[in-house]
Image (cartoon, rainbow, N blue to C red):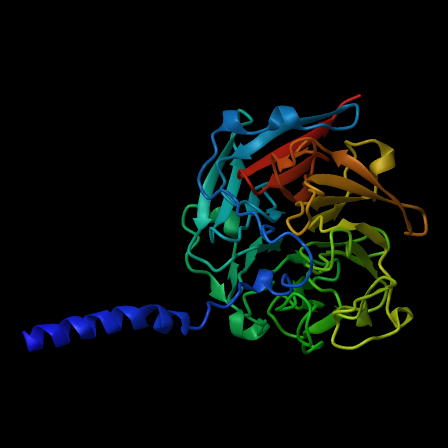
Length: 406
C-alpha cells in the first residue's frame, strides 16, 4: 500500500509539473516575413498568400474577369502550370517558365493547330525563379544553383543535368528574398538581382540589395546598382540600353508606406538608398539615418505593397504606337496591406527623354474590390516575336496572351 501511494503521488507531481516544463520551452522563431509585425499596428492576420500547387482546370480560370483597353483581347495561352512565374523565349519560340514553391521549370511549345503543349522540364530545384535564354542555351538560377542547358530546344524531352556554374557565379544562398531574376543584356552579359535577406536590417551592401551582371560563364561580376531591396524584374531600354528594374518595398511600415518603385540605372554602381530611403522617405526602421538626397531617386512610385515584379519594354509592332518602348509591369498584389492593392498589369509611360510621365492601368479584373479577394496574381510579362504580350499568372498556373486588333 505504501509503495502504491508513493507511485500515485509521484505521478500526480509529474502531471502538475508537465505544464510548467512545457511553458519553459522556447517559442518557435517567427518566419522571416513576420519579423517587424509586432508593434507595427497592422492586422495580425496579414500573411503571404500561398499559390495553388495543383493543376487548375481550364474552365476554372478567370479569363472572363479580365478587362483590357479597347481593341485588346485576352486568351489562355497555356494552363496546368502550377506556380508558373518568370518567362523566357527560345529561338524557336519555346516559352520557358520558372517557379518558386513548387521547384519546377516548364517548357511550353506551340502545336501546329495553335494549341500548346507543356512539359515539366526540371523539378526538385530550390525556387528556380530565374530563367534566361542566351545563344540557344537555357540558364536556370535557383537559390543555391546556377545551371546551363545547351541547345535546350533540341533537348526538351531529355535536358540532362546541365552544366553546373554555381561556383563560378558564387551568388549568396540565403533563403529570404533569395529567389533570382535574370535577363540577358544588350552587351552579352547576364543581369540579375540579389535580394536582401531580411525585411529591413543592417547588412553587407556589397553582397545584398544589388543588381549585378556577369559574363555568361559567371566571371567578371559587376555591381550595376546598390540599395535596391528586392528586384524581381528588369529590362534594358531598347534605344538607350539603360537598365531599368522594379523593386519591392519593405513590410510592416504601414498600409500606404513605402511604395514599390521603378528604377532607372544611369551609371553602374549608383546607390538607390535601401535600407535608408525610398525616394524622399527616410525609413525610421533603418539601422542609421541618412539624407535621402544622397541617393538616386526612383523613376516612379508604383503603389504601396503592390509586389511589382516582371517588367518588359514593349518592342513589338502589334500594339498601337503609343505603347512602343513603354514598360509593361506585372503587379502580383499585396499581402502586407489591409485592403488589397495591385493584382494587375500597368504601363509606365515614358517621354522622349526617358522620364516616367504616368502609370496607366492595362490588365485589370483580378482584384475584386467589393469583396476584397483576388482572382489571379500576374507575376511576369513577355513580348513575343509577333508583338503579342504574354502574362504569367502564378496563383492558378496559367499564361494569358494579349493581342490587339483595330
